[in-house]
Length: 173
Image (tube, rainbow, N blue to C red):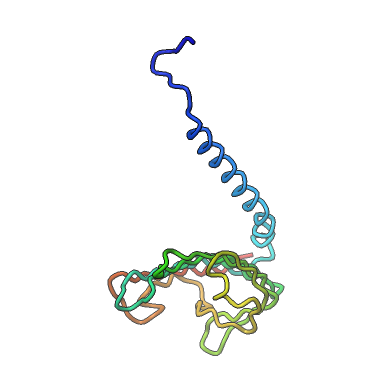
């Protein structure tokens, strides 16, 4: 066998790892492509509000267990919308993550000035059982006014290891 200088044939282990990576990437792309049409439809001329949310708490004296979430919400002019939220929780058995996709069938504004949503949710992952499958006038806690909101504006205080950021955008049409 002629070997080129610096070339090593792949071991069976490397081939298996490469195969797992390729399969994992392919599955991820199928999942992403499955949700893209819904997201693309929500960002059209019917959308009225676009909202990005993020919250993390690494302060063990205030958050037990350590947890966080990230997501986006689109509220349409016709009263419908979509939301995707990914969350995690660090428990005694390790990291628990889940993904929640919400089909918003109606939305409004509470007396407190936050968005209320109704709809159905599909949740996957070990933490999925903590998210309700049906939402009825669920108060999101998201201010129904355009702007950028942080830990102090949302919670009224700040502490080390806690970070909340909401970006609420009213779209001009």
